[in-house]
Length: 365
Image 1 (cartoon, rainbow, N blue to C red):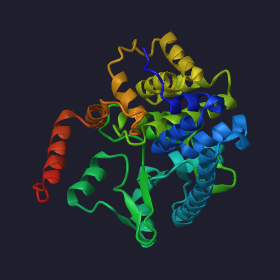
Image 2: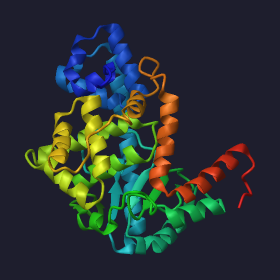
Image 3: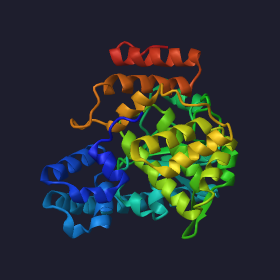
């Protein structure tokens, strides 16, 4: 049984419900949405349903500020993407944009409001040495320079050690696949590249297919163990599902299930569908789980993980924060590492991190 949904979750599912809010309710909605980094996304959806003139001053002013901030963020992102396309053009392969950068460059209205922590790109593994050199001579340096971190990323992970521009401070993650080499799930990287879609406006750039974007976002959210932006990432999944369903109303759920089987990502897909329905009431998501169950691709859910994800999706706002958020976040973090690497490697890695946090691991072997 799902817990009662907070106001923000109800408005995200049905934006027109905001019309019935009193002044205190509007202030609560703005506070909850701001804490979850979905303020512009939420208020723009409400304004589209009830009209911007119906917004009270607290919401109208917040939407105006978010609109200005979003325009600035998107302009900066487009400039950075253009620069990456220029720098990496000598590789002779398209730069595949991932997650937020892809959503914005594709022109999705809902992505206009998205906050960005970094830019993620995907390149064939064979091109990484040349890509790293091209980026280095154009001001991109490693933000993790410790010998262990460098070796860890290069040996076990699905990306180069994180990069940051020397002058602009922009963060960049260069992936060669979407999950670590040691992870429990093993999506074949070549199949991601096979289905990548070029951008008509610039043949130096591409994105994953809509289904692969959804599966990548679901895998990130439900296996990485990061909870700070959990609701924002779930809203991304909601919007991606709406976009895919708009392209193929009758077949997108079946196509997602088939693609998830091909990429060995059935479990993340099932969790995404469950919580899109559980948190936001998405009937399209319920159809995905029904399709998975019909094809006997998932076992019946026991609800073991529900309380942890419920707490994560409620976030940190005082009016929504679950008393179990701290323990849920810790367990999801450990679960993320458990899914990321085998026990022997996990114990050694976490021991080293604990030693480093305690101040004793700087020179640990």
